[in-house]
Length: 397
Length: 205
Image (cartoon, rainbow over all chains, first blue to last red; front, side, top):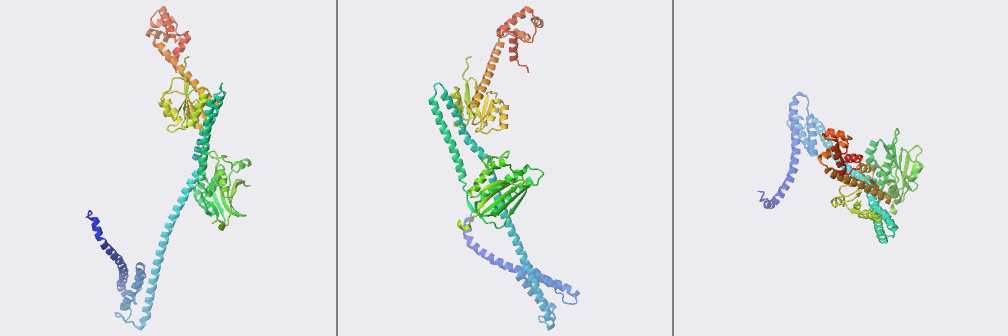
């Protein structure tokens, strides 16, 4: 059967389509029958129980029918509910409303039956409405769950990006390899230089060897230059991609990312942001890099401070025509001499620092036409701030 | 002494650095042999004569430090001068503890390298001389007869001829003859000289 499957499949495909059609009509019918069944069953059950219990009561005992209507509306929807109301009314009219065992209604019982029908309709409506809202609630819940997981995935992505960023920021490996690449030809140049002096001071001076050595010096010097050009090209590739950014959002994302780190170090990170700040045109990754660097510096500055409330405040304000972002720590602060040097490349106060973070940050801010500087706080600690110009949005597409 | 020429081996994976080192050594009249890897150095024949090794720390494959350990394990004693662009204290102390002559940071100055190289060559020369002396002594002691050997062993412990004679059951005169033959064969100028030779042959802990 399996071997002949290919052909058999082709022959049977129209038949399958017909069957599929039947199934879809069938499912509608089935659904209707199920609703009808629910209504019939619940009304029948109510009728049977009522017949059993009626002898105990001196007046018509009709409450179970309301239950049947509500059940039908719950499981069978509005249609099921209405069907149950119809069935109940017929049964009540025939068996319980005088004259009993007839569909005719006495004038005294008219109002009674009408009240029953009204109540049954109300019960049906309430029940189906309740069911509908329940379903809607469930749907909303499901939606919410989907959105939460989407958002988590997004956050995770941002976190991964930031982790990568911080790796780039530390740049240990990169600097080591650049240093090695430049140090090698430099070593050769210095060594050849010494050899050159030796060849010249021989008696008589060995001019052939001197010339050869100088030629090698030129080659090695050129090689060091080429390495530097390559490094420069590497950084050039990452040209800023400027977009309209909400600084509040960038700060918020970073604080989420750094929450664990701050808790680990016992630091309280606070944000002081004004809602509705004008958007600025900047490279998101570079702005994150600057902020991350300032925040990490602030945290590092507070590491050595004991018996002290460790607090880092990140604020953003509009001042004149600029957006001013401040990262303020309650750390050990900077003395005048250090404050002057911190923006110099390769200057660092950290035992394992490279001394590039702040100089890199400053060049990023300056590439955004802003300024980055540090100022001491009277209460101890340091405030790092940078400005970003606010451009009118229509001036730049 | 008919000394074979000194050789300085240079192992650095960077061609310009090893050429430069070789050029500098050549300019002061030294002979350098350069290799791109420790493997190439290990496989190459090493001329007899005082030598030392200028070794880069960062190398493809086994690092300079690992190669140093391997040489020690294989009992190849060649003085090593390390050069590196990025040494740190643990690295330096590891190399020095294992017997390195010097640990130089690139770029280094001429005198730093030349002094280290000369120091290395001196150390190797002394080691070679001591080894040569020892093997000559071994040849000489091999020429002694069993009786002469016995006499020598007792002489160097400080016994006089009479005591030795008593111990070996021989006359004092016979011992005297044996003793002068020992002095002759060992080419010892004095008793003190003979004691020193015995010490060299059987170093006491």
